[in-house]
Length: 214
Image 1: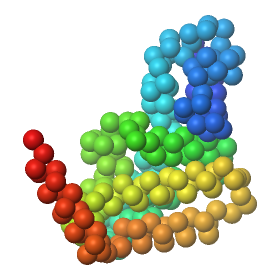
Image 2: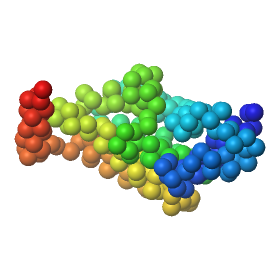
Image 3: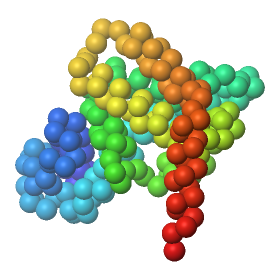
């Protein structure tokens, strides 16, 4: 049973990376994994969301451990430089570029995040023990109020995810250091960019319109 489960996870991660979440059926995952039972995915994971959560559970601990270590160092140093926080967001994910499984996971991660209704594990959103939740909490006081209100942190997460997935699809590369450093620069700029007067005005108009709704 364990071997079948692991084969299903490997097949799902690979197919999702190659074709995207919406283009892969549970039946195709069964077939790619060589599962004898036609309902093996449903038996082990219930549905697509279940298998995605299981893939995350396999790969996220490595990312979480790396990000927590970087955030520990940032807090110990009393760091307030946004580039240090941008690095804590990017580097643990960029480390996955070094191997094929990691590159496949990065493509799945971007697909999961970049959706109208992101299929993100609940821990990312509301568990203080999760490294991304911790990152969001530590970055918020460093942002301008308008930037925080306009979901600047999610913009940074989304851009980093898309760029890392693009790099993963074009890999493997002999050296990802320049790519990683430049992506950290760009994420720093995203976090630090001022909110224009036009954007403030439009946001205020939007909020006023929402307040008038019954």
